[in-house]
Image 1: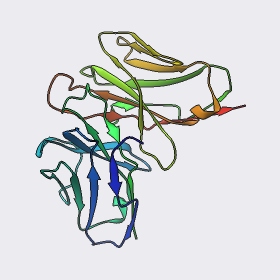
Image 2: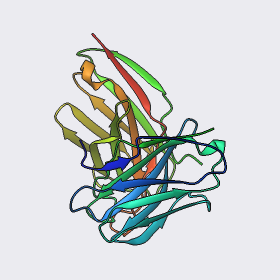
Image 3: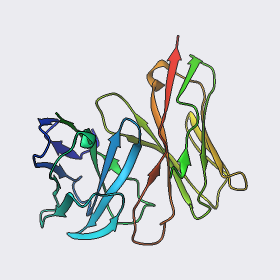
Image 4: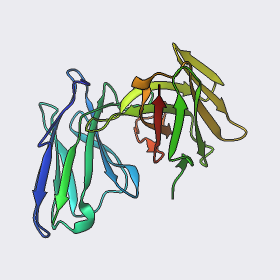
Length: 114
Length: 115
């Protein structure tokens, strides 16, 4: 158990819909990262937050947005969903924003768009 | 553009033997490398890391070797155990020392250790 929790575990929805994925980092970790793992792309970095502020952005679509709240939990919002958005979404956390710190991953949310 | 490549999607090794997982990268700015292990239905778990100022790092049965001139790293597991069967991801970062925390991942290698 990494100490990072993600809800829900599974999500099935239809094209055009909007969903919210939730992540609670390990106790004491200030930095949260979101990754997408699809079948043909491997793990792709989406976005990073540190202590409530956006710190780095990767290959995140404009239809996707994220935020980190004062209690440090984070939400990833996916809207106007397409079939290609079906993937595993992982959240990770680390004590600081520097990559030298190990990132600890949650169990992931499996999103299926029908 | 895949900047971290794991060219072997799978590897099968007998218990007790050495497992060697390979990883290549293209970005010469990468200065920190990590290996993660992933079991089904779980998130990736950190295994071992190495800084670009070193060429070897060892932790128990796991050793990572870095060849900067070849832009290549490898993970050695000795001796391999059935519980090591998992997907292994190589990851790299160019941001050590800065405030950016992006990791670039390879697509993973499925290791199967048979008795």
